[in-house]
Image (tube, rainbow, N blue to C red; front, side, top):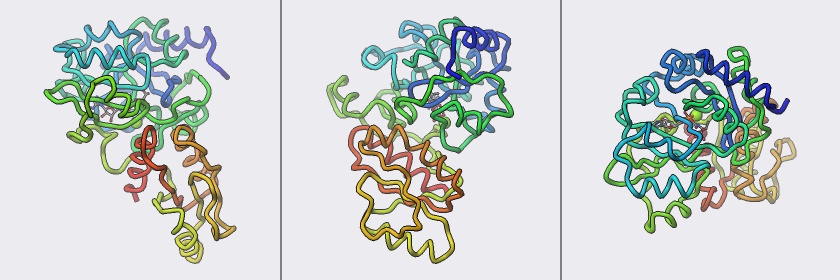
Length: 320
Ligand code: TXA
Ligand code: MG
């Protein structure tokens, strides 16, 4: 059921009472707690099964609130905030005293994001504070892009899911670290590197320290094993798996490779890179529903949002 004013009011009340709620954002669904309440934040870690030293993103209603949560904000960081917020960018700043260790995992920095989804914004407005929220999935698993996917993963542990329909972007925000001397992209995501370069006026560096769980090599994985293949090799690799008694599915941009065995389940092909991003997690979940053992994934070309799709598929493939 789509979130209405009444359910948003209930969710805001739950946040004030120190409870956790799941809610739609434009990237993926979040599992939120009052960012100023350590006990509430601890519940998020518990339900997700997430290690305590892995920091959360603090979601804000407006750009102006960064001055409450961060210090030593550079001009470039502010330019990025104004260019992309509300939207799928997370910026890492030096933290203010307001950002507690429970949110930052003990780091001296804090990750902030102003989401654009009307449901997330309605919740932030009604709650009147900042919401600490990771993606609403169990640690290491595929992020949810629908209310149904949240319930599947966390339904036993949470009472409120604010349904905002299928996520428009479909994978997580881009994380950019503006806390040090050099600006670095820590995680490719909803805002493309080209658009960031345009705002900065130079090519931003990518990579940096791997101090975030989303930047672990193995992450974002379904139950099925994910194997990255080329369209050309897919039919032979599929045959080998089938001969070994495995259930195989293909996830690939069109066209379906010639010679693909008919026993291979073809997950509905994404026509564009944007669509690949939007449907990726949903297709991986669908593979699990069908009891698939191996998903053969053909990467998108890898520019624009395709960079983030390549990143997530590579991490999913690194898991098993
Ligand atoms: O699109 C998104 O970013 C979604 C929606 C709900 O906003 N959230 C999300 O949260 O993907 P999560 O917790 O699954 O991933 C947040 C990432 C993690 O990799 C975390 O380590 C990183 O942000 N992060 C948080 N605070 C950080 C910090 N101070 N420095 C570096 N990385 C940080
Ligand atoms: Mg996550």
